[in-house]
Length: 498
Image (cartoon, rainbow, N blue to C red; front, top):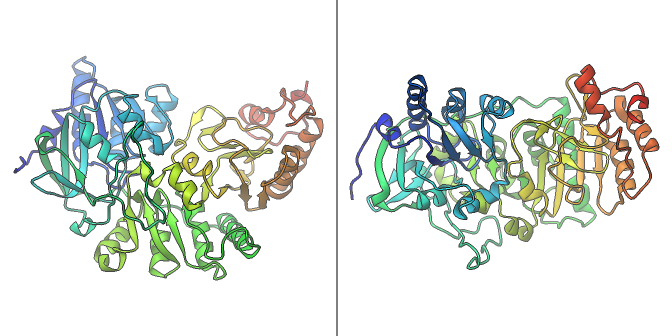
């Protein structure tokens, strides 16, 4: 069967007000880049004519400005799930303009299948190749592509020549059955291949192919600095010590790491620590740092959902595909983030916190409890099921006006029951096997910045005694001071402890 070549504008015309569209990709990697700006043009024209035009968007994770950014700016998004990083989208969410559903990434595909979010009207997939029988070879990410392609009424393919056909074969596409027929996901080591290298689409649903030559809207991260380098070194030293005392096997365990400059610093430190043997990654994203460690022989295999790398790095993978083909694999997000697989493999998870409280509860999504930053992403998928769960953050932000260690988190994403280790540039708090009182003492002593340490000790002294000691009136006092005075450094707790 041959497919029609259509323009991006014609493809966009199939999307109607009230539709839900499903998008390939995970981070800006592998996301559509041509059709969504044309949808934005339709929405803008409809709004100017006084008619409504808003759509729902289902994705694997964040996208790029060509989707989340442009559609947010013209108020064309009614509903969106899950994770995102676009600043214009964030502003619209915090202004109450978008119904944003922040769910665990491993759950996104299945919640679409279960019908929790409504019908998928149109799926838009980015591909490096499409065969006449509907085999769609994805580009730089897996995301929720298998599910949206199967459920959508119509499918549009963006055939993107900016991605080499060398990408064919890097994907392992597997979609589990739904309950009560679901079986175990048969992954027993990160390199296990359990599916096929393409997304199978009913050819009759493909309404056309849009020819594109647009690279991913790759994000760059700030260079390491003394703070992030120290955090990275603290994590590496901690893991090396745990391996030396037999907590971690001598062969080491697979790692999961989040996105950003702290994650890069941690991986860099692990790569330099020769007491840690070459290791594997089972994670949701791989950054340039991991690709460099694969080239250096420090990472043996990388299983991921997304190659969240710079375009030069991605081209380097395509150019050296004979080297990388048996060292890299991309999976759908419900597999890369599967709690079942994470627990089976014994993943060591390393994620970033906005703030942590003195008992080990973590806020990874909201500034001062109300303003969404990005979303929970896959951190919860890994944290609760990890062999060792680690959260990292600088001890202070905004030139010391904000402490990352607080009496009580202002928004609760990860509970004290799931968080094993907290690391700042100040040190490491090992919370394993400790009571709440012991955890509080460990976190304040090892992770709090000196400007806040005495303030936190004073809070603990005045807290009402109990299994978990708190002064409810004062628990969010540091946040209140920040909102009122622009600084968390209280002179005393008197006005908050009444």
